[in-house]
Length: 98
Image 1 (spheres, rainbow, N blue to C red):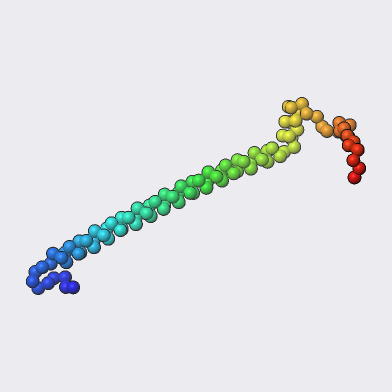
Image 2: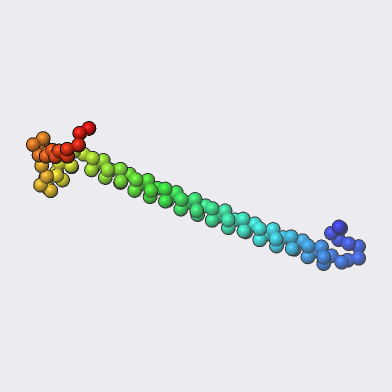
């Protein structure tokens, strides 16, 4: 297809070029919008990961704090608990022999 015909009818060629350019611009803009959406989703994922790491660190700290014997004994004292000794244990015989 010649771009310029001898008889001067170039409107179809100009229409085809304009249509091609419009489609190209629309696709280019659509692609850029999708790229920006992916970037935003990636940034949100990074922020969520950072928040999850901080929460995980806080929870690990709390777990370690609760595991410390000093903390456990302080909590037991506050609740009036005593150390378990052999004389505190009652043995009940059920009559079954093993």
